[in-house]
Amino acid sequence: MPRLKNTSKNCTTEMNKHKPWIETSYHGVITENMDTVLLDPPLVALDKDAPVPYAEASDVHFSREGEICAFKIHGQEAPFEAVVLNRTSGEGVLRASGPVDCESQKEYTFIIQAYDCGAGPNGADWKKSHKAVVHIQVDDVNEFAPVFREPEYKASVTEGKIYDSILQVEAWDQDCSPQYSQICNYDIVTAGTPFAIDRN
Image: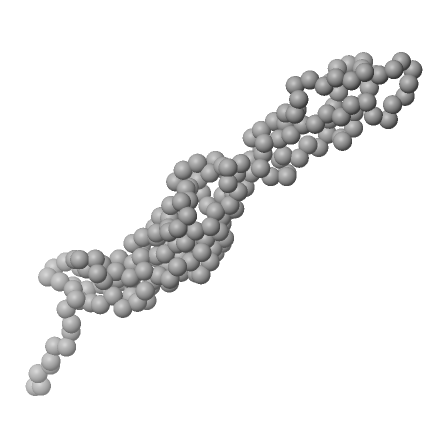
């Protein structure tokens, strides 16, 4: 009976051959004062070094080279963090790590990379993906009420004379978007006043 030669390799020395792969750019939207970023496309890192089970003694171990251990943000000081949700599928999420305020900053651009779990004892074997650009837009919330530029407006009129315009008032709004900061109308709330006001 012929003898079979054992050609199996020790999986503990398995090489981390491939870099993780992510998209080249991402566009995100976050509503101010919230923490979750809606990304398009979703944040997913792929790695061809797929997890492979192997046996050593009586235990079952898994190769970690194909798993994703981290997403790291580089560049501009941005109040965001990237978190791995599932190491095997490479799914991640981008969320705010601090306050995000449209009135302070309307958009952010930074770099992100994915890192696999193939680090050796000295950390020399891990691999990282190419750099991808992330652009995030901050959506406004209607936080502020309009305020007048002046606390008081004064004008005088001559009795019996008809005027096209007597006085102009102006209000403004601190919200960052035209949707919430534009002044749409003015109303005179004192009853019985013989004057009218228009939206201008």
